Each structure stands twice: as C-alpha cells, then as structure tokens.
Amino acid sequence: ETIVSWAIGPMVSNSPLKRLGRVAAQLQDVRSQNRCVKHGHSSLTAPSACSSISQQLSYAKVLIANRGEIAVRVARACKDLGLETVGIYAKEDEESLHVKHVDEAVEVTSSKPGPIAPYLDVENIVATAKRCGAGAVHP
Image 1 (cartoon, rainbow, N blue to C red):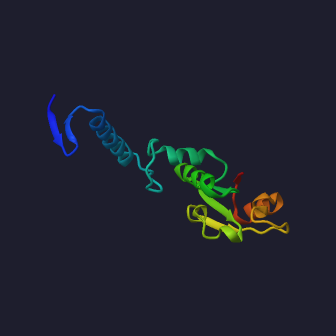
Image 2: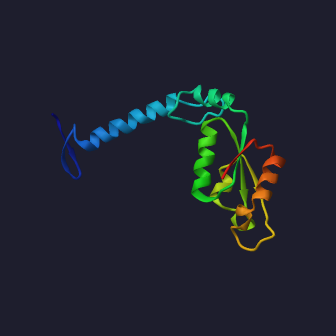
Image 3: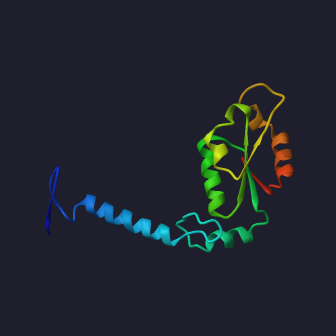
C-alpha cells in the first residue's frame, strides 16, 4: 500500500475515504450513461425504462395533490417515468418549491377558510385534474 501525504496527515491510498471517492465516481459514470432518451434526465434505471413504462400506462399526465417536499419527490418520480406533471397550489404557496418542479402549476381555491383548505377540497381537485387533462391524481 502506498502512503499519500495529506494536510491532515498520512493516509493510506486504500482508505475508506478513497474507496468512497471511487464509488462516487463509478455512480456518476452510471448516471451519465443512463439518461432518459425522451427527457435527458439521469436515472438509475435503463435509458429505455422511462419511455417503456409510460407507454404501458393508460395516462400520460398526473396531477399531484400535495405540496412541499412530498410533491417535489412525486414530481421527480413521475418525470423519471416519462409522465407530465400538474401541481396545485394555494395562493399562499405560489412561490413554493413544489410549484417550480412541475410541468404545469394551477392555483386552487376553496370556499373553506385556511391555507390548506384548497388541498383538501376533493371536488375542486378532481375538477382541476379533468380541466388539465390529467389521467391520474396522486394524493
């Protein structure tokens, strides 16, 4: 084993830190090879998986009836599957992160008071999904 001198002191070249660096580089190589042909995003699935899964589904657009980090993760998963995304937001959430991660964002309102009331108004959400052409709703 070769000894490498670092600012923090000597380190063996086969140390856990070096192995972690090699694994990270290998993962980056895998991600760069597995790009979605349709969208160009990286995925740990095969490049053709995105389009083949979306072709098996009876819908191409999903309305995400949630907000925050959950909505961001659902949007990312839908995009990995080649699905278009519609996000809903209340007036108070207009600048939220989940609004920026969807293909289409629609403001929803509710006759009931409160900042989360629009997310709980099932009839309005279903009407919004139909109006946008979404074939599925993720709660």
